[in-house]
Each structure stands twice: as C-alpha cells, then as structure tokens.
Length: 278
Image (cartoon, rainbow, N blue to C red; front, side, top):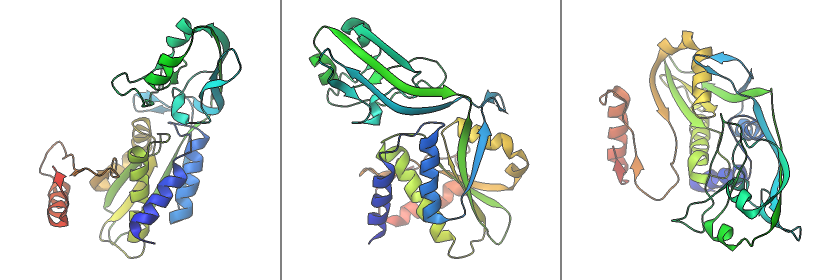
C-alpha cells in the first residue's frame, strides 16, 4: 500500500465520526490516532476551567437528530449525514409548521445541492443544515423535530504526542480534531500529522517534535494556558490543515514573514515540484 493509500484509508475511517470541540467523537478519533502512532497522551480538561481569558465549555454529545413529515418519514436525518445537525444544538423535541421550521434551517442557496457545515458553540440554539433543493421541496404542513443530544458539564479532550529529539527545543505541529465529515478540513491534517509523527519516531531528529491533536481555537488556548512554562522552548510551529484537495499547496507565513520556518517551508515547496503559493 502506498503512502497516499494509507492516508486515504485513515481519512475514510475517521470521516463518519461526529466530532465537535468536545465529546465522544473527539475521544474516538484520538483512540484511532493512538492506534496508528502509539504513545498518544490524552488530556481531559473539565468544563468551567479558566484558560487564559476563555472558559472550557460544556460537553456536547449526540445520539440522534431528525426532522420528520406528517407521514413520519425523516426528511432530514443525522444518521444519513452528521453535517445535517447544527453543531452544539441543544436538545429539542417539538412539532411545528414549515414556516417556523425554516427559521432553524441553514442552506447555501448558490450551491443548491450542498449541505453546509454550521456550528453554534457559544450560543445555545438548535438547527439543521440541508441542501437548498431539499428545503425547497418540503410541502406545507407540520413537522416533528428531534435533537436527542446532551449539553452538560464534562470535559474538553485533546491528544499530545512527543517525538524526542537531540535537544529539548521543540517544533510544535498542530492539527484540528473538531469537524465532522470534512475530509479536507480537518481529516487531511490529522492523517498527515499521524504519518509524520510515525516517520519521525523511527529516528532521532534534531528538535523534539510535539504533535497536538486539538479542537480548533479553544483547544489551542487550552493547551497554551496549561503549558506556559513550555512556550519558551518552541522554536518553530506548523498548523496542518486543508492538505487533501487537488489544488496548489498553500503556506501561510508567520506574522514576521521571514522566520526560519518560513524560509524552510519555502525551500521545501520550491524543491517539491508541486504547484504552491506562499
């Protein structure tokens, strides 16, 4: 099996898992990452923990979610695609007319066959995402709505894997584990980080490499809040995201624009033969 085939296989396994910034989907994802690289340290940070000027939110988990017509048939079904549910939707069980239901539906009118990905991490509401074509096809009438989910005190979960180097100076490699059913963002980053960690672990690189598998934004803030004493060792950092599409590779430079990592990436991409953009 080629490297590309291995990466694709891992993405395919992770794709169906419903992930968010917290919850069992993140834990299941980290279990699979640990199976691939071994030695993944999993951290659980309780709800309400102060992390810099943010607070760890409540934990969200979903059992099922759907919208059904008068005949009982599910017209929007979380089981068919976990993108159908607005991320962090609060629990609801209600019957309502189409006009009211539409206030909770999200579409992309310019792409009538797409299901958008939407979240509401820090505002308590519920909703469903669907194609514009599906919403346009819904007849007038009453609809039964169910979001069988929990939003309660729990934990924010993230994974950390260290490849020791010749020095304790570190390269920080980060990828995000908070999106459901999005192959390019986040799964391509998870797959590449997992393979890179495994390859580096076969030798002893100059720098120690720390791999973080974290939910976006709140995960980074949480790690920084818990590791302020370690920040001084970080010499370089990379965030891996959107690596799986057929377009050119894109590298976003540091704020300085001429840091050593900027020059290294420009050198590597220049020699790769791949179309790229800096």
